[in-house]
Length: 118
Image (cartoon, rainbow, N blue to C red; front, side):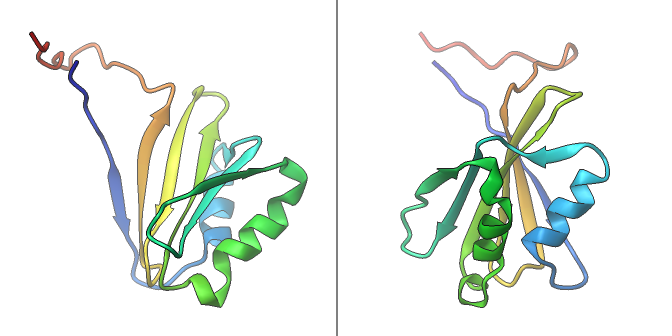
């Protein structure tokens, strides 16, 4: 079986917080996945955790904590109208982030199929 990956990377002129990124995305219909799915890579294990939605402020505070500025952190986001989402990763220094579509990825009609494995 073959697989494909896709990612979009963003670079900003100024450092930003996870909270600011989520707030900007919320203005155009994106939201944190429910239940909250997040990760702080402070041990090179990329351990994902989940929390109930009512812990949103605690999770955002954890991801934006000064002690995590030099670690990768991530949250899963979802767009209800598009019925799709993925992982939003914030890299050390908080001037770059990446989005990996992992929730209900769609096949584009004009795209080629990946080669099949024998």
